[in-house]
Amino acid sequence: MESAAGLACSLLCSRAFWQGVSGPQEEQLMKMMSYALVGFLVLAFVLVLRGSAAPYGRYASASYGCLVPANLAWMVQEAPAFLFPVMLVLCSGGDRLDFWPNRFLLGLFLVHYFYRSFIFPFLIRGGKSTPLFSFVSAFIFCSYNGYLQGRSLTNYAEYSSNWITELRFILGTVAWLGGLLINMHSDYILRNLRKPGETGYKIPRGGMFEYVTGANFFGEIVEWCGFAFACNTLESAAFATSTLLVLGNRAYAHHQWYLNKFEDYPRSRKILIPFIF
Image (cartoon, rainbow, N blue to C red; front, side, top):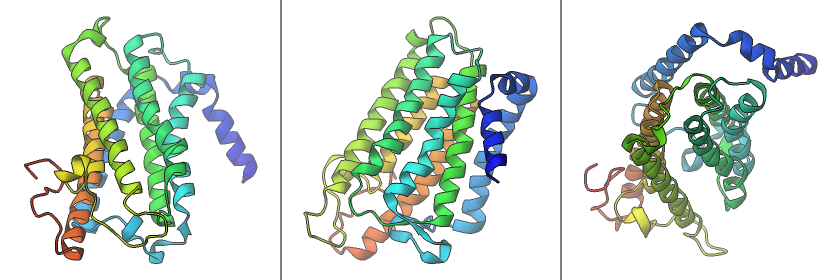
């Protein structure tokens, strides 16, 4: 088993391997993978979840497998989304790596996942353990998406020489940054809800939580929609759509949970989109 894993790792890190698979067939495969990602999630929500929350955090249950400590789970499950594109940069000899738009956009993706993989897990305070099923699912998603975004931007996405001055690129980048800051600030509010020694749940207040229940989810959705707008690729659009589906479902479950648990929960708060939904 170890020798097989080592062989697979060596193959993925081989420049000859990536040069060999590069071409119209891989590009078509990536498009099919993008459609399949969104289609799978839609079917999962329609046939399985049906408005219920994915089993992690406050909805975690041992019936979905043994529990993985929150810090470890976040680090390991998110890391492939950072490590896979880095490996592609170092090993694939991507045709588009010489172009600044590709480098910049890939950098945006890596900044987020470096934070999620190697900084955020150490900021968690007493987070609930993650069921093995949710942990493995997140790991697979991040690996899948890390390949799609990394390979698209290193080898296939083509931009004009003045793309970084185009309005679409500028607006998308600003949205990405704004979403990232909203997400990080919302996480900060959630981490500091309880004073040392306190237990139980409290109503989040401040920042975007004054407008929506899923403030942290709203920030991440804005972030990746901005990324997709700036990238202008099918792969990034599939990622943004997937983020909207997953986190939108999560925000809905959170909103219902807060309404049921707290009689004084602000009824004026929307679920996910300020003043609208």
